[in-house]
Length: 133
View 1: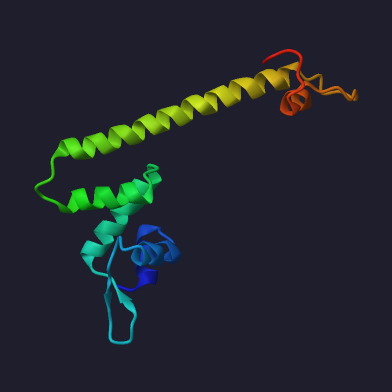
View 2: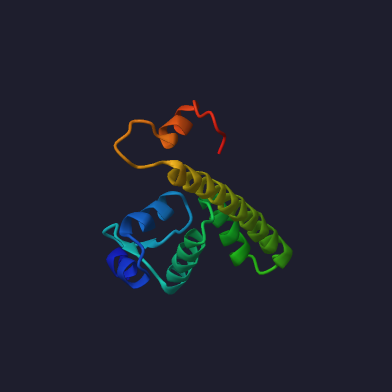
């Protein structure tokens, strides 16, 4: 199977597939003319990588997960530990986003949104706000 077929089948851009090859996450066969030739196991690896990336795992996390996936003597505790660490990062991001949301909501609520030049949003962004939000 060529890269175009794999791209269409998995919904991964060809550029992404080439990148995964460049950084050593996959190693498709090469035909005599130098074209990539993907086999079923390559499709499984690419689908695995696509799903892991969709869940927000970093490339290095994907490298670790791929190694664990291919290691039949792995301990599931290693996989769970990596997933829990990633989940903690996601939860931190959610908390940070909620804080940003709350602050910006308060600023929007405080702004009259009329023709006057005073604006609590700009005041807060400038650090000159007299009332903490």
